[in-house]
Image (cartoon, rainbow, N blue to C red):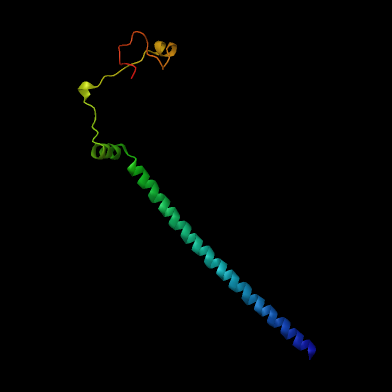
Length: 108
């Protein structure tokens, strides 16, 4: 009789441990799914931010903003001066001081 009672107690303890472990496993699975959903949302947000960054960084967008907010305009092509550097003169002169033959204001 005592053996049967002892076996019954052991059986109940084993059953409770199985139920507890199953509950913990289900809870861990739910947490895992929740984190996977969160990861997917963050990944989608990252992709959207990448697209937004590329859109905001385009030359056309920057030019529009500069003209609208800062009242900047493109320089007049008639007033644009192209300056070419002689490769041999470039290597022998310093960037800090203009060459002696350069006109005043050319160093800017």
